[in-house]
Image 1 (cartoon, rainbow, N blue to C red):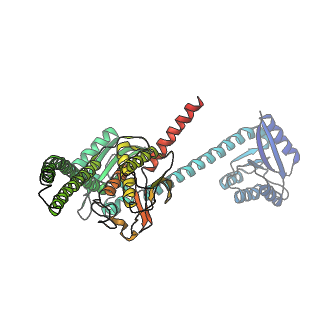
Image 2 (cartoon, one colour):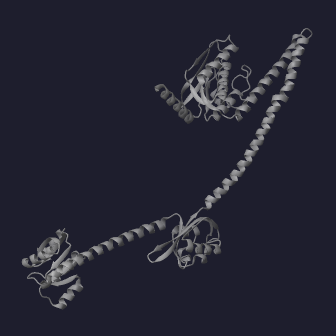
Image 3 (tube, rainbow, N blue to C red):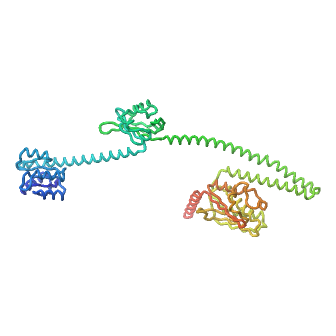
Length: 521
C-alpha cells in the first residue's frame, strides 16, 4: 500500500514538479501536493493546510529558496525543508543547511529524494515521540512533586550509594520542626532525628541488602528534643542510572497515646468487672439472706399473731385484737415488699431468652386472673388482636402483669373502669400501650414514675411500694426499648413501651415471609 504524503512544492516549473511526483510515486508514495511560486501563495498554503514536507527550488523569477526557508521557519519551524535545484553554489547550499534546511538534492540526482524524504519523515516522527515522552515525563514529575509536597506523611529521599539526604517534604519538616537546609546533604545517620543512631545506620545497611524495610514503631527526635513515634517504611528504586531510597514516616504518637489510654481503660474495666462480679456475688448472698433469714422471723411473728388471736379471742377486747391484726397485716406487707425487691433484683440480672410472644394472649390471661381475684368489680377490657413481639416470654409476662395490675389498682375507685391494650404510633415508633380511665397522675411529677419506692397520687388510698413500674422499666430496657407514661389527674393514664425496633422488624418480617412461603406450598 502506498504511503500518504502531503507535499508543498515551491517551484515555478510544473514539468519539474510532475517529474518529482512521478519519482515519489515510483518510490511508493501517494502524494497530495500544492505548487506555489510566490511568498503570498506559500503563506496561504501554510495557513490553510497541514503539510508533511516542503520541497523548494533554489531560484525562481519571483521567489527564492532562502525566502521560502525563512517563511517556513517562521510559521512551522519543525516542518522538514528540502532544497531541490538544478545548479547551486556549494557555499549557498551550506548556508541554507545551516539556516535550517534538512537536505540539498540536485535535479539530476532526483532519485535521492525518496530516501531523503523517508529519512526526514522518520526524524520528524522520532522528534514527535521524544517530545511526547518529555511532556509525559514532565507531567509525571509535576504530579510526583505535587504528591511529594502535599503528602501528609513525612518523606525523605536518599542517595542509595552515599546515604545522603537529597530531598525532604514539608510534612516531615513540620513534624521535626526543622528546615530543609538542616537535613539535605547530610548522611541519614549523621542527623539528630533518629533516637538510636546505630539502629538507623543498621537499618540503612539492611535496606541496601533487602531493598525494603518496615518498622511499625520507630522513635524520632524533633528539633526541640521531643520524641515522637512514627511508622517507618523505606524502599529502594532506580531513577535513570542511579538508585534512590525513599523513606515514608507516619506520625503515630497520638495513636500510641490513644492505645495506651485504651489499655488503661481496659485495665479499669477489667477491675470494674471484677468488682461487679463481687457485687453480684454479694447480691446473691443478700438475696439468700432476705429469702431465708429475714423471712424466718416474719414467719414467726405472723404465726404468733395468728396463735394469739385464736387463743385469746375470748379474753382480749376488740382493741387489742385489732393491734394483733395490724401487726399481722404489717408482716404480710413486709413479705410482699420482700417479694417485690427480690423480683426486681432477679429481673436486673436475668439473661434474655428471646422467642415469639403473643402479647394479646398474655394480656387476656392477665385480665382473666384479675377478674377472678375481684369478680364483683365492673371493669371492661379492650385488648387488640395479633400484637406479636420477639422477646423473653417470662419477663414480658411480668411487664403485662405489672402494667395491667397498675391499671386495675388505680381504677378501683371507678364505678365503671375501662382498661385497654393495643398498638399505636408514638413519636414515630410502633409502640404498645396500656390505657386506663383511673386516678391518673400529675405530669409535673412524671419523672418519678419509674423510680423505686416513688409513688404518685394518694399513697394511703392505693396500696403498693412503687416497685412495679421500676421493674417494668428494667425489663423494657433490657430488651433495647423504652417506656413512658402520660396521664392527667382524675382522668386516667397511658403507658407506652417499645422493644428493640430493628430486631422486632427483622424477626417478625422473616417469620411472616416463612408463613407466606408455607401457605403457598
